[in-house]
Image (cartoon, rainbow, N blue to C red):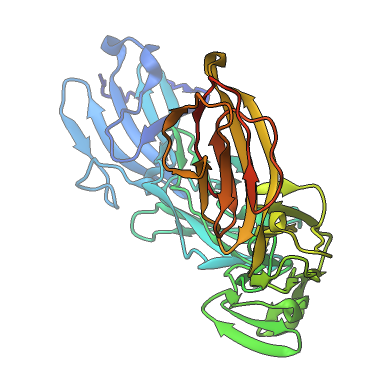
Length: 486
């Protein structure tokens, strides 16, 4: 409410001034500037007048009591009531009652940034090299804001240890008066910055905290460490393949390497691997790999190829006559300790076989097993060529239920002998069972040709070892006979 001023010459006017009040308005929104804050009764006001201080005092409007508002502005405020950032100044409301009282109001207009983003980002960051990481921009704010940089949500400060400098600048739009704040970060990266998230943030006087989208960077660095990795069977023996892999920790990873293969230089590109095929004992030695563009960066490793040479003499199928000697020789040349074991016809022997005088019993398949880093088997087969038939022994044993006795006749010979039995000169064939009632009956075992074991069933008192043997029998004993050849 406003009252017109009363201007009588006989009235003395007294000017009163109140303390300066600050009013905050948000950019783009409507706000009110209070006058006297209700300290004067509206019915007592004769006139209200608004003016501002901009160098010189300028009037804006006047409101007489019971009259409409009269706009007296002749400058930028003429014809408008909206406010811009340039309206941040002191406005004074003069109220006339019995006295004249002025109420100055300081108007401040705030605006939060329109956004916050990191621009001009570096393509990559090289370890130990000071690089412009990027520029954080806060657009269109009032007043200008302060920008803070973070790495993994921890503030960064210019300390000369990685963060060399943070340069801030403010650009004011000549039309809107809004400020754009830019903050440029110069950073010296470390290897552990791989995958780190960089952000920038600001908190305006009014409004919540603004945080930019995170930015990550490729951290580049020269190779510092190299390893030559060997992939090969364990143990590595002759005939195997070996894969050599040159591992370097540089970023980006090197793409070309030199492999030093015992005096031979091989360059590979777009790969870090080289394969040695069909290695031999001569492949044992020192191997190196290096960067193709920096031979001083290298890695070294040793490769040992194990080997085993076995020579069994004689070998294969060996034919010897009974009584002849066999000089069996086993020669081993190996890169490590070996263990030798022998078997005959798959039965383990306690010692290495020796054949100073061959017998029929020596015939068989002999195998030598050499246990090394891997197992190897070599074998030979000993067999007789010729030998006269020999009855080794004739044994007897009770039969089942004691009703008959078992006669076993062991015979050796080469080629394989044929065996027959006869009783009183009568040939007995097959596995038949015979009852002998004549005490003078004499079953006889005869050898025709060959080398086997003969088993006979019968009653026997004695047998003379010869090509033929006569066997006297006791009366009433049933006799069965059977033979098998070995």
